[in-house]
Length: 144
Image 1 (cartoon, rainbow, N blue to C red):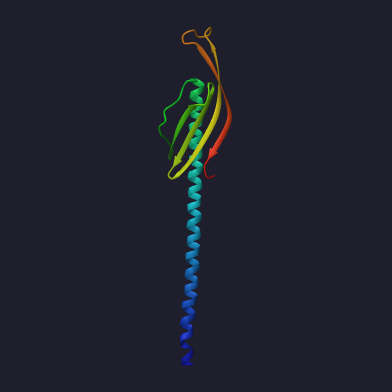
Image 2: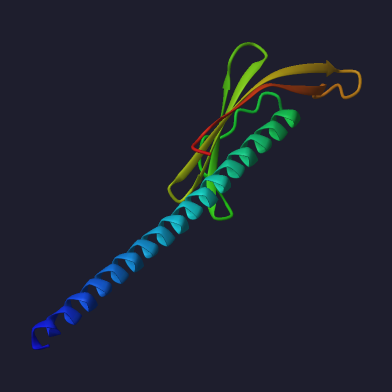
């Protein structure tokens, strides 16, 4: 009987090793899921920040069709965004907005056509301008 006494120690060590391996694997899976959730949250927030920048630019263009904006970062909530407006032709513009939250970044590019109707009889100085904006394309660049 004395010859079999070492087997119990080997079995206990083997069971402890398997249990430790399973615990570490479960902890790794849980932390990976948490990180993926955080990244998805940040990219979603970055997308909506970029969309806020596009909407702000379109609203400014509606009020002033010659508005080209400032290409600097604006803070909103937990992130920030910047908007760039570039002429694509005589009445065509490209609005590019970038939203950033922590490491996540989303870029929206919107192509618009402007239709400006001027009526100096309503307001002669400065003349009244009615601006119509038509979105021709809306592209999203990002991981989600």
